[in-house]
Length: 128
Image (cartoon, rainbow, N blue to C red; front, side):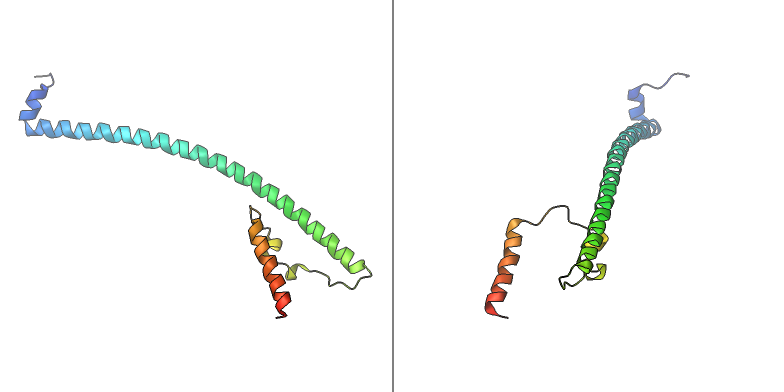
């Protein structure tokens, strides 16, 4: 009796049928885990590429922010030294997007700009 029972015997014996069913479930679970592991490794690879891309973008934006701050400082110096009575800009009077470097990635659409200009012109014409 050292041999495995035949499959047809497993159908007649509830213990063997349950054992066969459990073995099938375990094989399917192991296969699912291997598939999930493969999928997670792919996702991790994609995320690592995204992290590298975002770090590069952050470095670029930080450099651009420094350039803009230097330009603003130069403009402030020119404004303060000029003979024209201009109001000197300081960082407190700038919008938060300029001081934090949170610039939008896409420029505004041209129709959005036109809408702003036309509303200013209408305001000037009405004399409000």
